[in-house]
Image 1 (cartoon, rainbow, N blue to C red):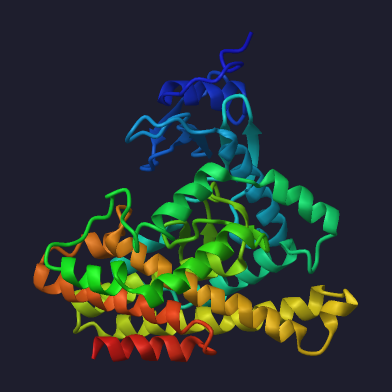
Image 2 (cartoon, rainbow, N blue to C red):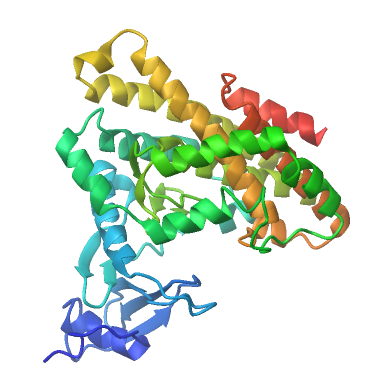
Length: 401
C-alpha cells in the first residue's frame, strides 16, 4: 500500500517522495530539494526542484484545520480550486499555470512553477510598474468570467457547475469579513488604527445610508449566481513579469456576481496608488502609472466584456436591443461597489494588506486610511451613477487634494 493512500499533512521530505512516487516528475533516485514557499493560513505550498537539471513542480496541499486557530475546514475546497484552475486554463490559457495532477485523497494540487513571475502586490509596493497590466488583467477578466454565465452556457451545465462550486465555508469568510464586519463589528475582530476610532464609527458603523447599499451588495454576493468567480482576486493572487501575468489560488471559487472579481482587482490597485501618494509623494511617475493602470482596468474590462458578449451570446432574447448594455452596466456597477467593500475591509478588518500595514508613522497612516475609506464609500454609494475609469480616478485625486 502506498504511503500516500490516506490523508496526512506532508512535510518537505514527504513532498519530495510524493513528487517522485505519485507525480512521477522525478526519478526515484534523483536528488531534489523541497522548500515551503506558502505563507497562507489554510494551505501548505512547496516547490520541489531537481538538482540535476533544475526541473521543478509546485505542490499545494490543503489543511483540514486553520493554522491560526485550529478551526476545522472542509478540504473539498481543494477540489474546487483544482477544477477552477482547469476551467480557467481552458478559457484564458495564457494566464493560468498548468495543472499537472489533483490528488483527492491527499487534497494536493500539483502545478507549473511560475517562479519566473513575481507577486504583483509586492512588485507594486516596491515601485515596479508593468505597462501591460491593464491590458492583461482586463483580458483575463473578460475571458474567464462571461463564458461561465448562462448567457453562454447550456442551462443544465450552468446549474451543475453552480452545485459543484458551492463553497459555503469560504463564502462564509467573505460574507463576514468583507460584507458585514467592517460596518457592524459584531464579532469584535476589526482592527482600527488608534486615532481613527471616531472616524470609523461615524463613517462606517453609524452610516445608515452606507449600510443600505452594502446590504444590497451583500445580498447580491449571496444570491446572484451569475458567473464562476475566482473569489479572492487581489494583487497577491496575481503574479507578473515583463512578459505578462499569471493568476493563482482560486480556492474561494464559487458562482457569484461577476463584479466581485473585477472589483477586487480594482480595489487592491487603489492600495498601491494610495501608498505611493502618501509614502513617496515625490514619485509622481509611479503614482501616475498606477492611476493609468486603474483607469485602464476599469475601461478595458467594460470594453472587452462587450466584445465577448457580441462574440459569444446568441440567445435571441439576450440579443434584444438594449439588453447587453443594461446587463453589462449592472456588472460594472457591481464592480465599483465591490471595489469599495474590498478597500474598506482591508483598512478596518483583521485581514489587512501590506500597503497599509507597512506604513508605521501615524501622521501618514491615519490620513491614508481615511482617504481610502472615503474612496470606498464613494465607490459603493456612486456605483450606479455611470462611473468609468476617469470618474473613479478623478474622485480619488479629489480626495487626496
